[in-house]
Image 1 (cartoon, rainbow, N blue to C red):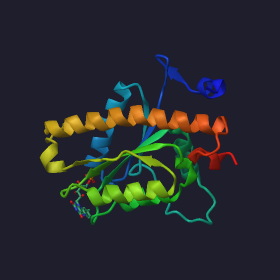
Image 2 (image 1 turned 90 degrees about the horizontal axis):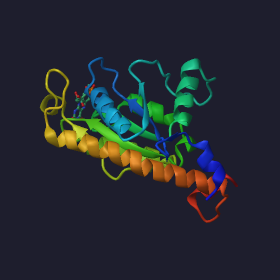
Image 3 (image 1 turned 90 degrees about the vertical axis):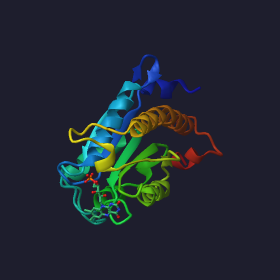
Image 4 (image 1 turned 30 degrees about the vertical axis):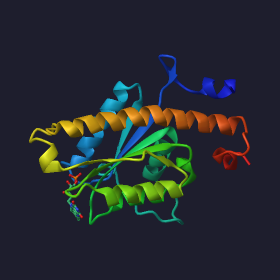
Length: 210
Ligand SMILES: Cc1cc2nc3c(=O)[nH]c(=O)nc-3n(C[C@H](O)[C@H](O)[C@H](O)COP(=O)(O)O)c2cc1C
């Protein structure tokens, strides 16, 4: 084991503290996607993670322009992405797709996602499978890893008027995705960083030190 990499990790209870960035892709003020994301991030913190929420409805992230000089907002988002060890993307289902806000967020990034695990949430009336698959495809193109399942919620059927989850199955799936993101996210991130630091050839990580 490379001593260096383990010393770099902040620790909590002897284990690495996984830093999770939740990204909320609805610009609606009373967003169900955001509410779902908050609940899963809270659950991830109960599993020992450190979580931050990037609410694309609260910032003005410009439409991605490859030639533009990075604004303060763009630099802040970039810093949050490099801070994160894992991600939780939450989108409303718009026309069977992820929201434009989430796609625009993803367009800014590429290899920053390598060796990091992503989880997916979707607010939909139709289970949101296509929207979550699209996010998974974009993340794969950026060398990110994905949980093999996502969690979809239906705003009217799964939440009550106070914003609490009324469907026990959703509660259980929120807990599952939070737990899996923390556990598998830490495994992937630590192994990836160890491979980079140890300069392990014949690994996925080798392209990041050559
Ligand atoms: C432009 C637009 C397109 C939508 N397309 C779909 C859709 O294809 N399938 C679906 O189930 N819901 C669709 N919806 C409904 C939203 O997914 C739903 O209202 C969701 O709760 C919004 O998430 P939010 O509360 O986080 O903003 C659409 C809503 C809008 C505004």
